[in-house]
Structures are given as structure tokens and as C-alpha cells.
Image 1 (cartoon, rainbow, N blue to C red):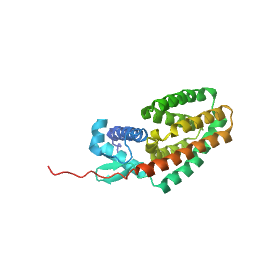
Image 2: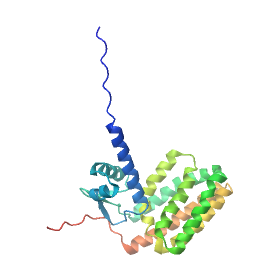
Image 3: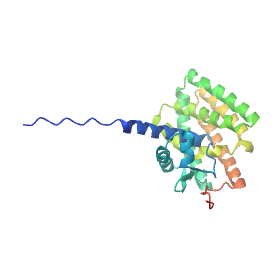
Length: 240
């Protein structure tokens, strides 16, 4: 009987390639969440590849993943933008966020330790200072950090993944709220959430979060109606 053939050694290149794809995907997600791609604006594969210092392939694959997650929409063959936020879609995201994020903050209120709660005070102070200075570049990331510090404390990776998907769809539009006065009301809700968590009061924490989400949705509806942020469109090419 012939001895079994030795199995060929698997190449290592696909591992590094996948790692690069994941890295670009994470970078692009952060760009979306922090307002680097504004509603109504388009970006190309080439511009992102140059910005990230990579080839077009991992950027294109990251775009495909984010289009599937409804965080981006195809505008042309090599361009993407933030999907248009209709009143119906805004209302749908509002309802789902209240249910899902409300569950997360309720669980977090029951289990957050004083050490885990500590950063919330610094983030509230950061948001208040950013509000006073009208500094969107500071406020938006601090707001996200505040919420996700709480959501991570829920102890559910599955729930956190759902919330991240929701924020990818709604997060870019938070950048439109700076001039609406919504930041002041949101900071008030954040303080109530913080106090409810310190007091281990899940119901009060959920109520404060719901008010925060409702107020933001109301202001977004007004801003989008007034500014009429368009769906992203591909730029016309000029003859050379």
C-alpha cells in the first residue's frame, strides 16, 4: 500500500490580505461615523485608497461590505455616498434604536461598576465644552464614546453588533445637528442617564435614552426638511 501523500503547505498571503481588508474596513467605518463622509457627498475608490495608503482592492471590498450594511450606497461604478435619509427611514431607525439601545442601557445600568462609570463624567464634560465652543469635531466622537461606553457594559457582544450597525446608518447625520440646539438637550439627557446608571435604575436610564433619541430624531427631521440634503450623485466628467 502506497504511503499517503504529504499535504502541501498552505500559503500565508491570504491571511495578511484579509487583515488589510479588515483594517481598511474599520478605517472606513470610523470615517463614516465621525462625519468624514458627509451626507450628500461622494467619494471614490481611488481617493480613499490614496488617503489610506493602500491599493484599490481592499477599499473596494470594504465599500461592498458597507453597502451591504446600508452604511453606504453605490452612486457610480467607483463612487459611494451616504444613503438618503427619508422621513420613513428616520422613523424606522428611531423606533429600532429605542428598543435595542434601550435594552442595552437597561442591562448596563444593572451591572456597570464604578470604575466603568468613571469615563462617563469626563465624556459629559467634553461634550459640554464642545457644545459651548460649537466644536463638531469634538462633540460627535465624544457623544459616540459616551453611548458605546454604556452599551459595551451591557455584556452582550450580539447586542453591541446590532447597535453598531444602526449607528452606521444614522451616525453621519448627527453631524448636522450642531447648529440646531440639539446638543444642549442631549447633554441634559446624558446627565440623567449617568445618574440613573449610578443609581442602578434601568427604567430611568431607558427613559432618558428614549428622550435623547426622540429629540435627536425630531431635530434631524427639521434639519433635513430645511436643508433638503440630497441623495449623493456622481460628479459629471468634463471633457479633457
